[in-house]
Amino acid sequence: MIVSIVVALGPKREIGLNNQLLWHISDDLKNFKKLTTGKSVLMGRKTFESIGKPLPNRNNIVLTRDPELSVTGVDVITDPLMAFDLALDYDDSDECELAIIGGAEIYNIYLPYVQRIYLSEVEYNGPADAFFPELDPNEWKEVDSQKFEQFNFRVLERVS
Ligand SMILES: NC(=O)c1ccc[n+]([C@@H]2O[C@H](COP(=O)([O-])OP(=O)(O)OC[C@H]3O[C@@H](n4cnc5c(N)ncnc54)[C@H](OP(=O)(O)O)[C@@H]3O)[C@@H](O)[C@H]2O)c1
Image (cartoon, rainbow, N blue to C red; front, top):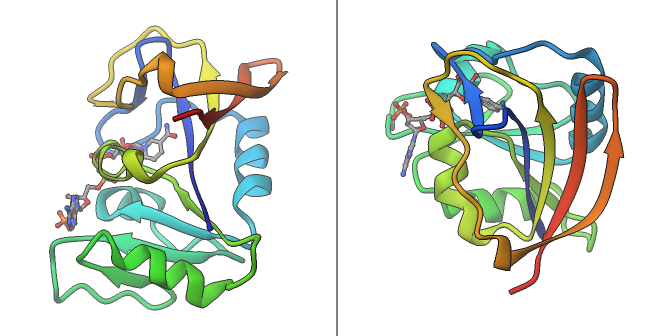
């Protein structure tokens, strides 16, 4: 199984404000859809609430501490490690990918398990209250990059 992160971040690693995204870039949303369709997507309860519904054509997993939470069309988990079994239940092939899609708390929890990061780097100069964790440059190498009009897309793989 590959565990990946998909994130769009500003120059100071900004990712959100008031439980909302900081921008709406249609090419980035298209890219996000392409990267995650057919895969398992894992998000924190707050990110799920801001999206408001399960993402179609994906195995939606939501992490919460609330054992009572139940949502149609979503696998709700209270133990972070349960996500790996659920991803394998959904796809037991070599192609199985669990995409960690945020927010800040969830990126922090799963970063040690992640082998690949899909980064959209967006120009932004405004407020934020949610941030992506700092990456150790010695642990990651760039394996792909692409320039879009409003962002740079990069793929990083873990080297150690
Ligand atoms: N730019 C991007 O690519 C991107 C992507 C996604 C999200 N975002 C933004 O990020 C922000 C949300 O991030 P956030 O950090 O506030 O929230 P979050 O990571 O989406 O969700 C946090 C919630 O996850 C649950 N949780 C955290 N640790 C847990 C653990 N160890 N065990 C069980 N449950 C746990 C808790 O849910 P309960 O409170 O229910 O217990 C917690 O409140 C929003 O602004 C959103 O728009 C940006």
